[in-house]
Length: 140
Image: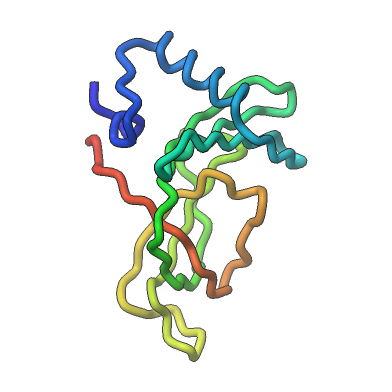
């Protein structure tokens, strides 16, 4: 079944395949501990990244793909979005791309983006940051 993971080369057929990939990510990746849990980033090559999330008891609670590319975008961070099925380590933000220099909440266009590692360096609301975005096809 197609997924965001298959978009970057991981063709998982079963839940067990997913579990094995999460375990491999935890074994091969680099850990980033936070007060709310741990992120583990595994970079197997070609810009592919997997971000595992572990709770305070070191149980896997999430696994997210990312693709590290060259594209960067200035974004005015307006609001933190809480999704209904999010873990403590998930985050999404609403912001404006290419904001004007006057700090107002406008720019080229508004959008929402997910962050696989929010607690490592959480952006301040109202700040303009440079983000590296990876887009995956919607699976609605």
